[in-house]
Image (cartoon, rainbow, N blue to C red; front, side, top):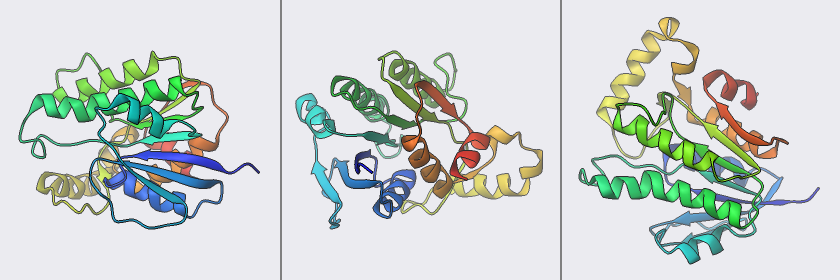
Length: 219
């Protein structure tokens, strides 16, 4: 079996950190490139941490070159960027779209992206509209295989405390029996497992995964 190289963007986030942990234990992936904006204290024989200015397109493309699968889970909040909408878009739009562009340029066969349930370029909600715009742009780039994951509420322990998210997790848990499947809360471990499984599948074109598809794919 040919061992593969995975590149991970967003490794310090809730989903990305779980993908990293699972990739470390996955024998199919011999090399893991972790692209970060700030130094990351991580030492593992499978891992290469690449400190990167994501605005440097040449360096960004070089970091992706040679990948068999690129996982992009990057995202921010208005609080983290002090309500700077330009900075927000640079992270939530530019980073994933450029990652997809460079996958196409370097013939990476698999691009896996996390957006959100309700993502639509026609949405009146800023967050969902931006995610929809990302999906549309990525889907237009002609990559051989794109897997887009659209979770609703995430279940998992963040390093950063988000009161609204914690309240939402409790409410969704209590009202789970009333919630349509695609809006059900999902554990980040399940998302990570589904994404890694998708990276190993033979698929062509753009595939979308919501709650039921992710649970099924995760096994």
